[in-house]
Image 1 (tube, rainbow, N blue to C red):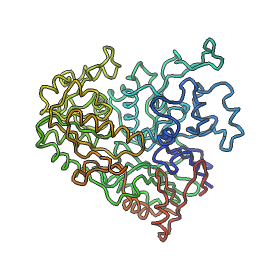
Image 2: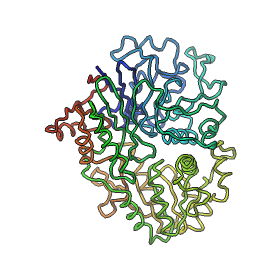
Image 3: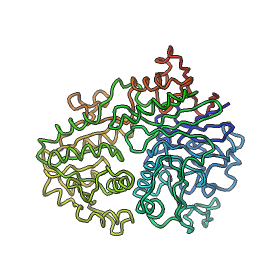
Image 4: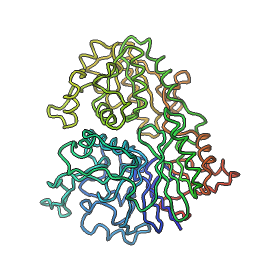
Length: 528
């Protein structure tokens, strides 16, 4: 009998944490950051206390109460005594690892809290992207996926409970095992093992998935971040397929097509399938995004700002082609340059920034005089590619500036001239916080007289993209009809929806398919 316990991803988009247990061992399917649950209690200026370690997250239900799987340096004295009589408490020590589907934080972020000896199984691209994001990001817990600095308890004067401060023992690296059979170049090995944000690591080479006690199959799929995959796990009850996030309409949709065929050949006992966009009838393709973006930009006379999701490399490449075809320079931020440089270590088709005439790198006006190591390397490696606010200001018709809402504080230095354009190539707001951000974004655009394309506007309390401006964003997730096709062609005995706010969609649409749909519950267990 195989047990699947759902600690996240139930009636929410993201936060997947699914424990698979069999006689062979135990695996977690993703271990993600639950954004929607965090927003119930926390916001920008109210966050879990770093000094409290695991306590706040366990008490507030943001981490499962599973003793034995977390970093001991984050455990306060007698931490687990208060949870041992709780309904969902469990002592869980022998974990084979985490099957990570991709590097988005809603699937990977809470790996940060796990013991470093718990293996993470992923594609090499996912591992490298996760490290690039961590190197170039903040030091917050939810980005310490690949390595972390242990914290040691130190009793502060006048505070009996103590606090956590960084240990002087150096960073620790997590054990990543990759599904790809590849030989890393010396430069790639150096990136993985040594070039961290602050200091050197004790080098730990990437392992491979053969170390797992389960027989695993890794199926590459198309998503809005490179390296995404679905996983197949051979259990005593048969094969279990875990989809992760996927789509059929993207630039690499054939990967997902191949996954469907190969998974179907396994005649799986169960399919755990995402359902982010079950209520969408169709999707925009990346080619349509290119065509609509070209139309919006081609006759622009001033500056163009392109706003698209971070780490969506396919979208960046789409706007790179638009930049080439409109005789402009795609002006990316240093963190984008670092990601492209990292990906090129594994994928030669990624453009070489040094050789690509249509790419330059924007240096923030108030950049630190002592930048982090990764940032210094970017400025040094691509010194001839650096542009400043004054360069953009004086030649506005030459650039497509890759800015999001969070980068708009550079505009007072750039001062876009009237007639400049803001091309929004992302999704509508999903919560009140994002709605506030969109209102602020509209105020910024009004202040600088930027004409928006594809930007949602508020009408009667609803946010909608004007009909004539749609088609500037291709979702990373399959639409409802495509998801039903995935389910019907794989034809599992049991389908379990996750990563969806409307899982009943599968019950309503698969009633006569021969597939038994089981809706999971939070902290509940499904036996198959």
